[in-house]
Amino acid sequence: MHRIRRAATSASRGERASPLRFFGRRTGTISQDQLNIDTPISSRPGSHRANTLTREAGGVNGKKPLTIAGQLRTCLFKWINILLLFVPVGIATYYAGVDPTIVFVLNFIAIIPLAALLSSGTEEVALYSGEVIGGLLNATFGNAVELIVSILALIKREIVIVQTSLIGSILSNLLLVLGMAFIAGGWNRSEQKFNTTIAQTAASMLTVSCASLIVPTAFHMASSTDTDVGIAPLSRGTSVILLVVYASYLVFQLKTHEHLYSTKSEKTPKEKLLRRRNKEVPLAPCPEPRTEESLTEAEEEEAEDEPEEPELTILFAVGLLIASTVLVAICAECLVSSIDHLVESSGISRVFVGLILLPIVGNAAEHATAVTVAVKDKMDLSIGVAVGSSMQIALLVIPVMVILGWCMGIEEMNLYFDGFQVMILFVSVLLVNYLIQDGKSNYLEGNLLVALYLIIALASWFYPKEGALAGAMEKK
Image 1 (cartoon, helix red, strand yellow):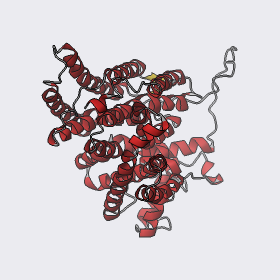
Image 2 (cartoon, one colour; image 1 turned 30 degrees about the vertical axis):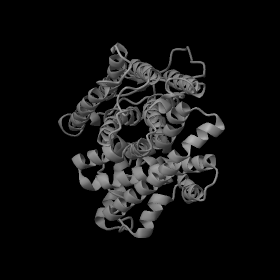
Image 3 (cartoon, rainbow, N blue to C red; image 1 turned 90 degrees about the horizontal axis):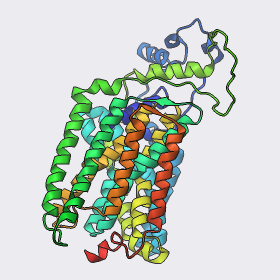
Image 4 (cartoon, rainbow, N blue to C red; image 1 turned 90 degrees about the vertical axis):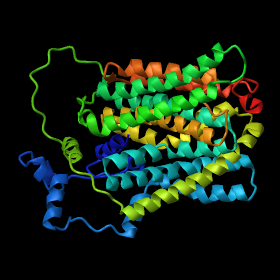
């Protein structure tokens, strides 16, 4: 995932940024003299290569030292960070004893920009630490919001919230995020192409993780008693195996098969799909003059091969990472503590809160990144962000939560999930595998993914309070 998120930043423009810079990305302009087609792109004034050469020569565009003010602007000057105002307000209302429903809403909004800062800090630290350590950092902090919320819910023995929020995060990435990316990138293209090897590798690992949830469920159903005897040791052993599988995937991605993740897919030109196609025999194609848009895209493609440079110092990045993690933990504590009152007072089912609402908080970054790069026809990156994040949760976060429950003596935290969750996860993984197996996507496939997500959301909204999943908390 860390390679995908770092590459996504280069796709958005010809300079380094974190995945969440898409919330407030800068756009450049090209002067008229840059449109001279006789001048190589890399030599034109204002191009990424030209600026690099100027920096090396010590010109006016030379690299400036990283100042505290400049680093603060890099981190905070994005429109999404307006929502940071909800952080102190949400925390204050919790300790002031305000209505828990208001506390839930305020802290729900506050976690979104904090997740953006957390991802930015992780990306910057990863640039200083190298490939292997960077991969481990991104594996640890890539889904930090989901992990923190799940740990706090586990401490409060909110097992239903833990299980539904983790399954909901997988579903949100696979169906909503990937579906919106297909729609955004395919509405003005007949189809988009991507590397099937990368996509199917991740999808195959998701299938394994899905099977790891089906096996305990089938084991419980085949048991002659209604007790959970054998479920806990089965879940713990399976979790260790899944962690080993994820570690082998990191080695596969970062070391042995790194070349697979650097292969660029074929681009598809934009077109007006609703316009009636001309049935006349087309004339011989004539070379089109280079426009400002085509030159900008060419410079961005050239900039992708340039080495990435950090925008924050290592101390500033580590400080940002620690501060964001602490604030996320505080806001998540306020959020989880207000869930019970929200469920009782509003009539919203606990299943809907965990399966639909909480995943929205943690997946805001993935959603923005995947959709933005899909619009730019960077489908390898888009699918990698959506499917890769789901794979992280399935192979890393869920097993870690089971092992933490083991250490805390919470037998109920195991891989025996409710049949409703297992079934919708299985159907979602199956649909995604069908859609990506040909290496092509279009807006109709995006519609199918979003439609299935809406059906699941509707089922979660009307899930009966006396249902097996909703009542599991009281039984345990």
